[in-house]
Length: 364
Length: 274
Image (cartoon, each protein chain N blue to C red):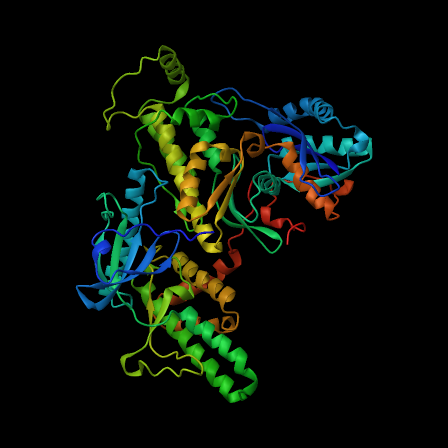
């Protein structure tokens, strides 16, 4: 069985082709290509621009994926697309492309929940059987555990997603959005040493990030660290590599210090709620999925926590963590295998689509 | 998989005889039984080990905030005469085993003898299921009346807590204990249904906070209602007895109960943007 997965719920357009061999051997990735809409430093991606990007790239990417996978259209069984959750305009442009291909090639459609796609891809790649899942990305922050045919949400953010918090702070500091703002924050944070005081907001298994963003934006303003000029200065400094030797602790924080403090604080919150969920359901495996999941500091912290509980952490790299097409193909094919189809008249998309709305027929 | 070892005890507990015995381990804290002052006086020891994944400064700040807030709630409640374990000692910066390093914070409390309500209700439900066929209708009625009475006592204990200006934050039947009163201790009818005699004692104030808001009080009750519904299905229909006990316990109870209606409708599900 071969499926094409089409993902475009945010600024990444991903086309993936997966093969589920008939003899029951492990699924194979035939093609996994992605094109990201990168906005200039200091700006986020707007829905209309992102949708335009997806529309202009989708045909090219599908052709390229088929070529890379060395399969012809006749070999494809179904076309899987992201039904939601995500940004309306980009979602729509990809759904239209999926519908068009379905009519053009006479293939059936399978609508997939984006979050379930992440979970199923993570399970496939890492081999984790029944983990507590931390799903962290630019749009979502959820702690999920599987129970009787649903991925149940144990804890989640009460306001913005953790990735959104990091991305928006990157905007404040005018850090480049290429390849991803979170990645550049991670690199800058490696030079940070001093921990500044930030709010820490955990309520049971839920958490909140908007107050932290306001606080660190305020600090950046107070110390004059935001804006374009500072970003250029910083670049100059690393080029000259004349590192000033002021290591005195209580000195003025640097841009790196702020990134470091932000990461330490929000990741501690995430590890804490994950630990609580693990204690609650009695699980020893943690799986981290979503774009923020490719952050190595988060993986390291989660690893220490899991080790102290006698368990282990499962994480993947950017090929599978960051939004991609194969995860949609993987989750779609699992549903397709149980007889699930999305008729053309229902092939819509939605911005709001909770993880626990999906009936997980393929697990017991 | 191998059981993981609990972290080393902070001093002086790495050195006391008999050594503290581990009773329970949550995500945040470990509960031990130890002795205080003299080996014949039992005490409960709650340790919040340091979390090595956190930055040390952040770790100390959080641990200290949380353990002192728990201690403040306990001290306040003891002063107000609410039945909670008394606070005996506290160190928010405990010293770890060998290197004399940071070993987390600890809190020592009065030892409460008796079962947690969860066990009492579980035993009762199991016993009822087993002997239901052999009981007459009036016996079943009197059994249910006994449990209703227990729930009423729980409700009134929570009312007294709220009256004192504290919300528990994590009310479950595991965080309510039943301390047998002095004259009935030992008089548990072994073979039959478990005793429901005694005082209800509230424990574990790790998530407690000081609040007089109806919203927080209502959420406290809602959490307990959900917990009873999921762990004690047979006792759930008697939740109204708990509400009645709560209603009669203090003046502000009526407005908190009114708020509970709203909280029930609200639930905790919300639709989330991509």
